[in-house]
Length: 241
Image (tube, rainbow, N blue to C red):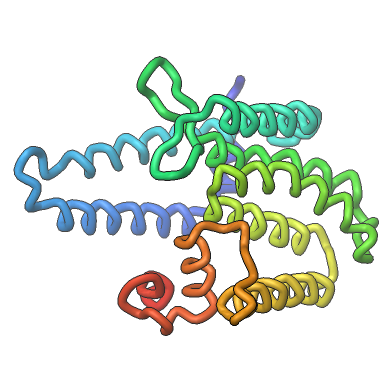
């Protein structure tokens, strides 16, 4: 593939500089946090540097690659995502009450839901491009919700609530950039939050409504809604952020 010099002119050098500053800060913080490890205090720093290098190589490749070509593989990418998530459910590696990984080569673990974030963005972007100008009402959005619901429910069943919530954020973020009215999206988000709050209230009421969630997942939802309820434990990270 010949190198296109125009790519260098179109780069956002300010953004690249900010990214490098953040990466440098992350290495500094990581080295400080692991300085007292007796075996190899730079182990995690080296691991982070390796990840940065691999990420940089991928970034350069993606800059030179015409991403519009991926649109023709929308259905294939979506199908591979679903197949990987089903494999996790059937033969996945279970640990700490969650079945989220696939064992490769006898010992190496991969988490398909992490790759799934990129795969769903690529396939859903192609899907939305075909429905441009046809996303004006709730009825128009129903196929989009169904498109996301299959991988979303497979991830919830693992169970991996954190990644499932990321998928919801991806869904609404992409719908926003696809031109869906902000008022419609805010109404849907508000309605969803109202349902969650009501379900949690009934769960802790004398009715004790059963929820299809683990206790730590319920605590995570509560800490997101009211982090100051337990500021030194479940709500600590939310308050700090």
